[in-house]
Amino acid sequence: MALQEAKKIIQESQNIYLIPEENQNPESITSALALFYTLRNLGKNVNIIIEELPEYLSFLIPSINFISYPKNFVISIPVKTANVSQIYYEKNDDALKIHLTVENGFIKKDDLSFYFSEKKPDLVVTFGIKDYHLQLSKKLNPFGFLLDAQILNIDSNQNATAETDNKNFGKINLIGNDCPLAEIVLDLINSFDADINKETANCLLAGLIIYTDNFKNFNVTAKVFETAAYLMKNGANLKEIINNIKRN
Image 1 (tube, rainbow, N blue to C red):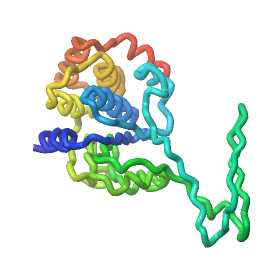
Image 2 (cartoon, rainbow, N blue to C red; image 1 turned 90 degrees about the vertical axis):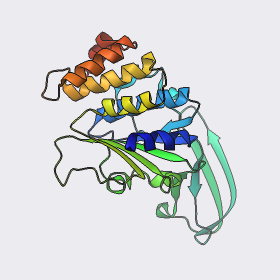
Image 3 (cartoon, rainbow, N blue to C red; image 1 turned 180 degrees about the vertical axis):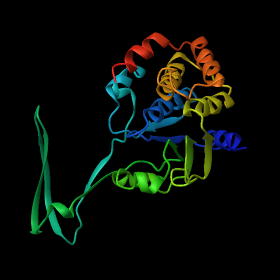
Image 4 (cartoon, rainbow, N blue to C red; image 1 turned 120 degrees about the vertical axis):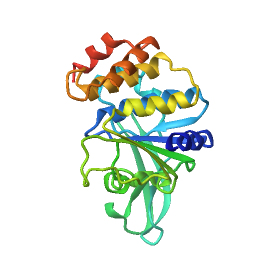
């Protein structure tokens, strides 16, 4: 039921932001990238909010510029603090400097606020995040335009306890139990009857390799091997993925 609801909310959305849990769970990043490729192929306007793509996963994208990012950055100064009468900037090879001429009042560093101003997204999709506000409240301060959007929450409760269970914070919660995120995301992608291209397959297989420690830990199941074989049939390059992930 949740899978069909997730499919429907994506079909109804055009502007979609993806947010992986990037600090403790690199599989979240590979899963987000897999859905990123799929949504782009479906004609969606899709962005990923990620601070830094790990070097050993950079082979999954053509270049860092391939991932779109909010472009309208705003610096805000309360009018009651100071009256700015003139603004100009200078730019060189090292930096961009913005100069403000204050007619009256005084600007302190704490008076400034910084944020991105973008079109409100139709949907935010999270990956591997247990508690949206607890884990992302500080990170999303510059992304206020995201905070009121409806959320599709994708996660797997792996070896979960009451404290580490997903909090089901989404409008739709696509939560698996003791399974890789790659399997959950693959089921979602297949629900669109979309082609699994090489790029998507590489991302999902990279997630499986991370989840199973290159098929060596207790997370390995028959389903994992079946999924890996399916992804390789769709173009995933096992040797390339293992060689890159071994660099971590």
